Image 1: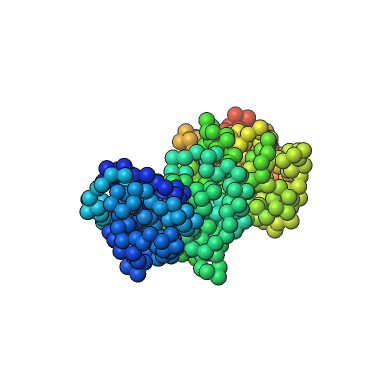
Image 2: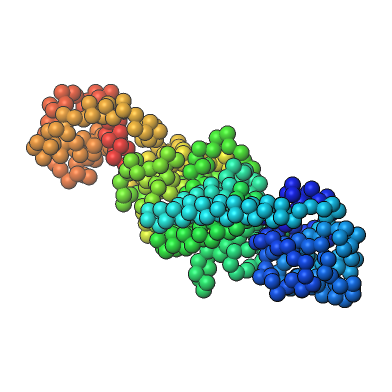
Length: 541
């Protein structure tokens, strides 16, 4: 209960109250209400009290009147309510002046009221709030205990904190970059716009604290000697301030534990990048200003043009497991391609490129580059390629084209992902610096068709006799067929690469024709078989 709430209470309004000073301190919390008519109440106070009095015992001496007010302020009183008429027609000017200096609100009641009605009303409200705080505290305890058992990540903790606080919550690192956020119904442009600059204006401090300039409530995250971030309630909470403080402190503790489980703050930041890239993948129709604000809060430089790029290892270490993917295409847990993502992020930093980087699909890392100033698409791609060429990991790169907005660049990530996956499955040899959709031909078409059951059925139907024959006899005819088709039917070239004699090759090709019941001299047959083999490759990758 605040002084302002007491002032607005019907029991107080019945006395026609007038606020005489310290209007900026009406937000002070009232712990209890005392009725006192002595000349020295300070010894009875322990802080947080609102005093009700008629000043009947107050001396006439102005010095003693000033001392009375100073003693109240020094004892921690939060307000003085004076009923006029019994001792004074108005509160003495020296008392009002002293109270203004001490920032102690003084309220004059111009009509007689029963103090007991005020104390009953305020104390009932205090008890109700304490009960509500206890209930809320139990909910918070249950929620964060559950998080501790289940090993929740930073984003899940921030999401729950925002839901319970009823306002936006932002987790930032020591560089004032956002690593997780939940908007609680607000817009990203409202909450995250120019976040780093605004956050730097908030002075450092200890413990949970409020910043009146921004209207934020903040708590440090991490141990006293190892603070690594700040958790911010970036708006007016839907719960009283004591509850909001308690929630924020408990959330900060949970985040500190979550960081230990996630190893370091870099993994928390990686999740934030992954979340935003997931939103960008499905961003058609989204608000450009909101996305730019969110990206800027994560450290992406402001730009008028953006470019989508994807990188894929030539031989992915982990096979795709679509059952583990979320609805946005991102894995819920630590991503197996995070090492590749860190390599790409480091390369972007080396190339002095501002980028959002994260795994976007199994075996593929996506990046959105900000083309700042006069930086051209060609220059940005060349700098990134040269930085990545120093990586020991064999990989392919795919790019789309520069775009005038994040929404368009984000939608290009889907195309770049398909291109990168298809390129990673292509035969080795000299590869371009970046693959484009035009470079991957029929393989790209099959990639775009994805898991279409008709493609799978076609490939099985075309190749099943050979697959069954190889399984029974260990003949390896499918691989011979693949090499034959890739050589364009050139037996001489195939003999050189396979280290088999022409006679042996002709014998195996006749076996293939016999098993399939088809002639390899027929162009349509060769095309169908080649498409089936490519479809098998794409499905396996």
